[in-house]
Length: 199
Image (cartoon, rainbow, N blue to C red):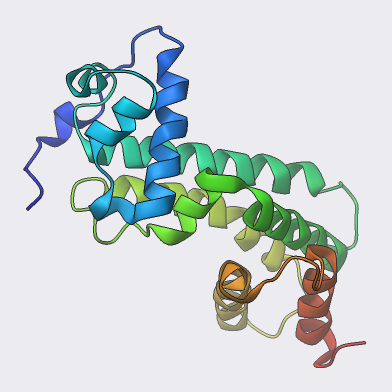
């Protein structure tokens, strides 16, 4: 059973120490490999040659580490997607570019990005609201992109966003290296959405 941690103490200001990044990398690796419930802070610390107690100088709970890994994973995806967007570009092309960047980050982003997909916020009681906010802030990029599309109604736009993100985030379950490239997948998604068929 997970010990209860007061939310105020969950996120401790990290010390100025390069071990924090090593620990964050280790946490991402363990969460990706074992999932949130099975990952142990002791193992995360041992991987970088630290004692288990030292890890609490950075965050006072495992939930704090999960949020930090999520933040980094979402930051990496966000940077890739925002870089892909060009001002004045056709709305469909902007959506396609964002989807390509999202898929490339998702399929090649390593442990951080995989944790974002594999460890959804709902099961983590105290961190849940913060993780949901991180997700919502990222999804706002797609809300804005879809709002410029010539779709039938606001209702349609809401479900288009859910459909697009759901389809993209499920790709790791069926994607195989050497198969369709992220660019081909994104273009096919947009083609179906726009015309109802693939080229």
